[in-house]
Every structure is written in structure tokens, then in C-alpha cells.
Image (cartoon, rainbow, N blue to C red):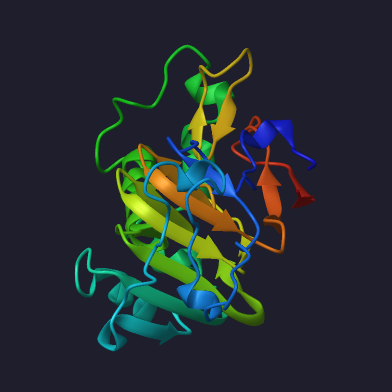
Length: 260
């Protein structure tokens, strides 16, 4: 994966933090194979099956089986029924940022003004932007970033199976959060990493400052019995990388095609 240093982090990792019990595994051989969305990890089939095994949403009743093809319906399916077993089939590629970065921008946010305000020739390198007020360019960036955060992150409940339907199912620009839950299976999906629409400039990061970006395709943290099977590697989109603000508030750019 090629990373442009001046941008900070170009993220294309599939998993941000490893779970207490995580398996990237193939399907368990069964004498009478169940449908793919009902298959489980039996005991002694990798770390995710430790103890009780991992069933995800295999026990879901018909009213908790969903097929979705857009981000809103996917998040609604996650919320439906709480932690009751559920199966969510993904049809096609679901784009969590289909409306583009401008849809998250706070009123008044202007990237050109951001560059001009925090140009090292004006701001210097000795002070970070943490104390900037709400109506400053950094304050408006924080609001914009929070809007994107709320929109593209999806929290996966316990007892859930998320499975791609066919060969071309997956997520683009989404960040799945599997945190402090038990018994989740994710399989047969491709992932294109989210693009941070509102990276933060930190003048104090290194000798000449740096852009800091957020988001992984998935984060697994503090969870148990998480089975993950994917036939396609995660990728990062082609993107414009902004280098540190230069004198006069301009920025140089280069295009990076990042893949893992």
C-alpha cells in the first residue's frame, strides 16, 4: 500500500483493533451443509469458536432476516429487534457516502479558509488547534467531521450475521463498529475504505506538522466470538492527498491509488 506521508494516515485496514476472539476462517465442513447465511463456527474451529462456538444470527426467525441494498436500510436492519438473532444480506455495493463530502459540511465551512488560517507562515508550528472556538475554521471542521462520523459508522449488535449476496457485494466508504458485543459473523463482502472528508491539520505533529485522518473499514474492539470471512481484500479509494499548507494558504496535491 502506498502512503503519502504528508497526509498522515491513508487507511485501508480491515480491522482496527483485534477482538478478544477473532477468526478469519473458511466455512466449517458439515455433513448436511446449511444455507450460507445459516452456517456457524462450531467448537474448536478457530479462535472465534472458542468455548461456545460462534453462530452469529443463524437462529434468526423469518421476521429478522433482511436483504438490503442501501445504507439507510442497512442501519435500520441493524437497529431492528435489538440483540435478537438477525441475518442481514447485502445486495450489491452499499455506499455510506453516496451523497458526497459536501453533505456533511457544516454551514460556513470552507477548506480554502482553513488552509489560509492555519498556514504555518501565519499560525506557526508551536500550538495545536484544540482550543480553537466553535466559529473558527477548525471549529467548523470539527462539526463537519462529527456529521460524517455519525453518518458512516454503523454499530453491529450481538448475534448478527452480515453476508454478501453473490460475487459483488460489499461496502464503500463505511466503517463497521463491532465493539463490546458477542457472537458476530461477517462474510463474503468486499470493502473500500472510507475517505476522511475533513482531516485535521496538526502543526505540532512532527517537525513540520501533519494531516491526521480517521476511519477504518471495520473496528473490532472488546468483542468475543467474531468470525470474519472475506473472499476479497479491502482497498482504499483513489484520492487527492493534501500536503501541509504553504505560504499564502495554498496546498499542493497528488493523487494516490492505495490498495492493500
